[in-house]
Length: 187
Image: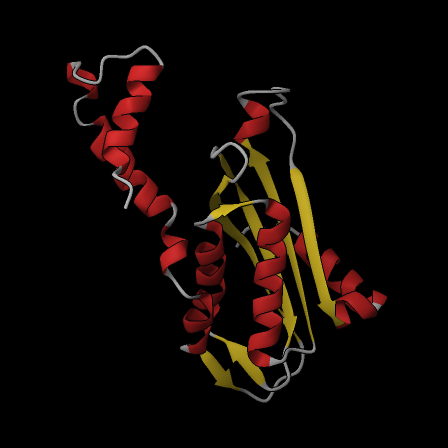
């Protein structure tokens, strides 16, 4: 098993810092704890998360949860990307407990990711877990790997979507979902 604290101490030395300097003495421990939290999704099973909150309910209409904030680490640079997730699904008489939708996003986002895969993973799990008629997931995010290094574009936002089932096959369903999530009204 890798000793993250020793590795961080080595990195500090390699970038020209003194890991024994007062302000850096606890940094390896702090970084280790931070990465443990930021990558907790590897130790969580998203299927188990949703399985605990699937309920039988006589409904087959569109259900949408908007503005689910998420934070992840880009697998290319291990820098944060963050934004909002919008989820819609049409059930076949099974619904999710609303908080579990946010927990699924959290579980997948707390891994090294690319936004494209993250969007697909959330959509696929939600469709398959209740055999939904359709699922739509849209994610909007700012990527620090583009903002603080490389091209340094501060206002760029990446948008990804995954449309499965009726959200993919039926233009009217897809359009209804996209129109409803565009309405960013506060409660």
